[in-house]
Image 1 (cartoon, rainbow, N blue to C red):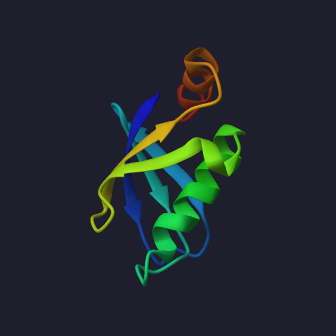
Image 2: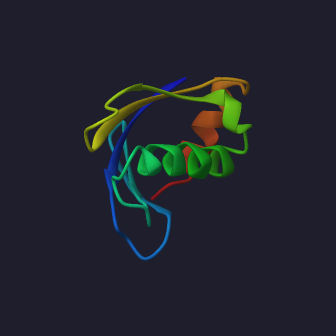
Length: 87
């Protein structure tokens, strides 16, 4: 499954803020230094979707705030259930 993520950096804690259409808004406590925010995003999303870290791939947006993430290893139906639970 491919999802779009808009990242808000330097937050107090890591959390999913909302979902606007197909774009997931995520706050991260990390700053954009040497790819740390990208790595923290992948770890956070692996916990959020309950998949292994190795199942999360950053496909686009390595240097931007809008990213394209691919999640494998879990059925699309279960991933959609998690997304639908976001207000």
